[in-house]
Image (cartoon, rainbow, N blue to C red; front, side, top):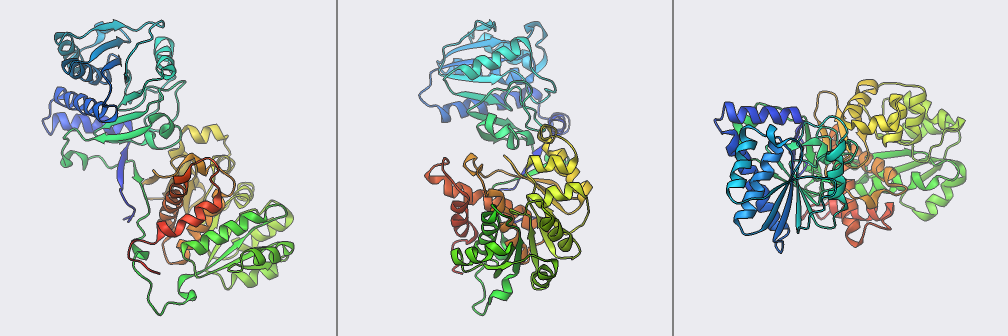
Length: 500
């Protein structure tokens, strides 16, 4: 898919980056030590730009190339007059090749190396994590684990080189313990694990340096996934025609709102309107229709207690959102059955997904929007299994159920068969409150109603929702509620100069 989303960046797995590294050395003719030196120089520049008052550094170095990068940083700091110490983990006798060369250069500059011991508590202005790179596959143990805990207990800022030690480069899972960095500088290719699951929490601010690897090398390894910073919405970016009417912008029907959950269906409906849908109807329990109409007269709320009443509404709608506050009662099940008999474009959320897990079905034109718990039920796994490899989980959802899948959470993933996985790089922890998923389903439906294809609507909807959350969080993350995100949507979805 050609996406119009802003700042589309390729993401790679650890094995892909190793292949890029090999190609850079063997085909592009860049010596490995040159790449290591460039990495160390970029990390040193990052330290200076992030923490300019600092004058001392402790570098935790392993025995591989990640440690070699650390030796380069240490040498540059030493040459700049900083007070520097390298804390060595692993057998220094095993340091060979480019890493050995970097270590020798550091020693020649007058650098000090001490073996790491559990009692080590370095006094420094900045700590640098250069222990282990992207190849880690099992939980850390012994001194390695202790060193991570020592770093995390320190009050001073931490720079992780390439990836925080203990973080799985492909999945973002924590392998026992992980360095909690303030800043991570990653090289050659952005590692996809930095941007989803636990990755954003442990990596801190992520910067990137390509180390001068030419585009001809990068083109030989297709990216495993793609990072998106915001919605492109090119198809909707221009001003609407002056002759436009509400029928031109689609009709969304939101179905849900069992007793005690009426707010969910209203939030989804309002989000669809704020996204630009021309008409939004709600099908909810009869007791709720009047109160919704009084609170939000722009929504056409209908009390629907029978399948016949729902079918009449389905005939007029182009896009259906099924699930917000739906529950799992006999009424809910009858609503789901009626909708699945139609061919309407469909966004499935909340209890509609839980009911789908009980009676699996497959179709090409729906968008499933589970959080990890709902995804676990759909895949007959536990939540931990889903979170241990979110990329595998979102692909499995599409394989089993068809259509497009949105796996919500930190670094929300979007996937459709035959396309890469898209990763949303926007959003914030303040959005972890009730009703955010209902708003997302309404946003996606509103974009579908305006003519976007399902994958485009899902990708742009996820990004618009996250960016609206970031706008709303400008006044603080704590206390952010779903209606704050709805209020921020117009600013995200209306580019400068669009006066619609």
